[in-house]
Amino acid sequence: MGKIPENIRYTRDHEWAALDAGAGLVTVGITQYAAEKLGDVVFVELPEVGTEVEADETYGSVESTKAVSDLFCPLAGKIEEVNDGLEDNPELVSEDPFDEGWLMKLSPRDIEDYSSLMSSEDYEAFTAGLENE
Amino acid sequence: MSDLKTTPFFELQKQLEGRFVDFHGWNLPVQFNGIIEEHRHVREKVGLFDVSHMGEVFVRGPEAVAALDRVVTNSVAALEDGQACYTPICRPDGGIVDDVIVYRLAHDELLVCCNASNREKDFTWIRQQARGECEVLDRSDEFGQLALQGPRAPEVLAAAFPGEGAEIASLAPFRHHSVVVGGHTVLISTTGYTGERGFEFYIPREACATAWRTLWSAGADFELRPIGLGARDTLRLEMRYCLYGNDIDESTTPLEAGIAWAVAFDKPHFIGREALLAAREHGVARRLVGFRMVERGVPRQGYALYSPDDEDLRVGEVTSGTRSPSLGESIGLGYVRVPHHKRGRRLLVDVRGKRRLAKIVRTPFLRR
Image (cartoon, rainbow over all chains, first blue to last red; front, top):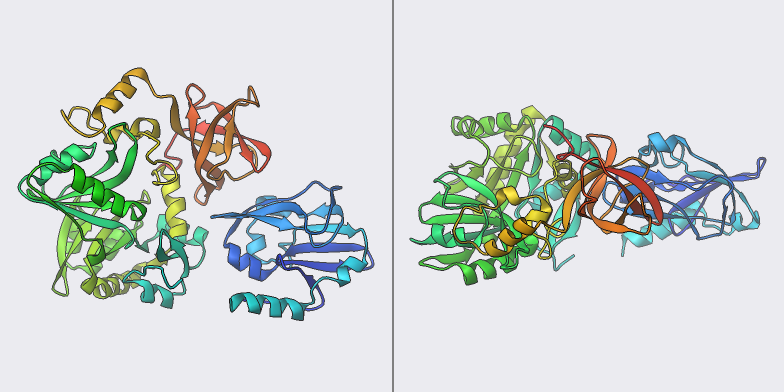
């Protein structure tokens, strides 16, 4: 089911969120589980920097050769940066979802929201449950 | 997944770690190593596709040729033994029942290869409409079907069937010839759905495992790989081959779809002739066009098309679209109202609420 790095947070929509407490920014991407389910990512649609987003709100989309999937924001905040490199190299989302395939950085409205997201253990159990369905 | 039909190649492909999906009731691999990689492999080398879901309907009897000639739009009467043709089957109003390949096996026997989703409909339609001394048989369950496609396909075929393979590989497109595999007759045709050189194999179920192994071991020297339905779709779309259910259906005609070349208007009788002749005379209201995205975005089936001159003017709808692995750009097919359909004209594609510029281009998208 793919690797699940520790010390970062996860959502039921298969997004990951990594807090840089010093900068006050949360980096967001999709998990390897999601990337494998999607197949080859060929196109990524990301929001404008400065956009305010709510938790669970659609902030963009990723498209594989076959289908479009919405991206759901893990927590409320303001988009501070998007991964421009994905415009020319969308395949990074498939190949390296936890690092070079990151999607955007946001400043969370309430940092407490971050700790309410799933831990790596919870997410692992969650995806294992999905596989057994 | 227990209700899904499996093909004779299911277990073999399971071992190759295919990712299976429900495709019109069939459990078929959508991909193995990734759609883009598989797509490129077929364009550059050679791949093997399980297309056993396709239907095989036989028409046989002394008047089989004349009977089928009246049911399909292309000229079956012009075929000789060993030849095949692509043809729509139309309703009296010109709507497309299916698009099929007809093989002339003998003066009194024809094979119709039809789309999986239309198999029962086609069988019923052909049986109802075929007039004359002939019988119509749905023998789909007796056959598996493979497609070997790519520039190295001739080499694989020659290695798999010493002597005969090289001969078949030298045939023109839309020809066929039979070989014997484990005591069973396997029909091999120079046809495909990718735009590459290649062959399709109609294999009695009992011979499927042997045929797969024969091709697979012969292919080892030529980097033969299994290919899923995902790449089959991107490959056919680059060539602008219509997909039934997407680009054509009973509400579209061959004239609108740009496959009038497969309508033999010089035949005195075929179902749909009067309607299609009238449409040809008066002109059609919409045309299936190929477009490429000028702005970012991937067109998908069902997206609306608008005129850039008047953003309230809806001029059509996307029927197929993808990111083209060969071209590195987003391409699509869609029906566009005349006169907005002309090559070079611009369109706005409603990509999930955002209007993105596209341009109507010449097809096939990929020059082979």
